[in-house]
Image (cartoon, rainbow, N blue to C red; front, side):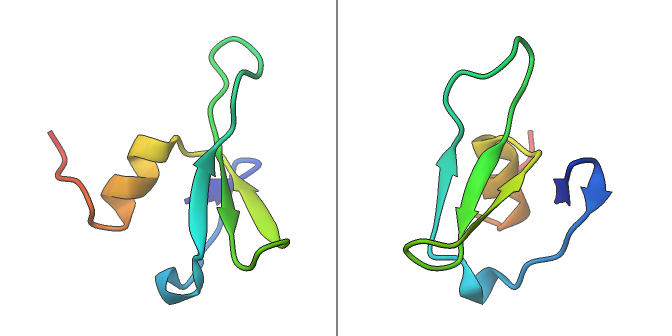
Length: 60
């Protein structure tokens, strides 16, 4: 995954939840990856891309 177009690695065991960022600029996408109830990292990938990365969905 990436954050502000820079590579980022997060241990999947530390992820509490993933929330898609609503709205935003046209063509923008991204998610908040929560590591606790209050701490999150904003990543560039969409929710669908995150689910594929974590192995919850198959690539088509």
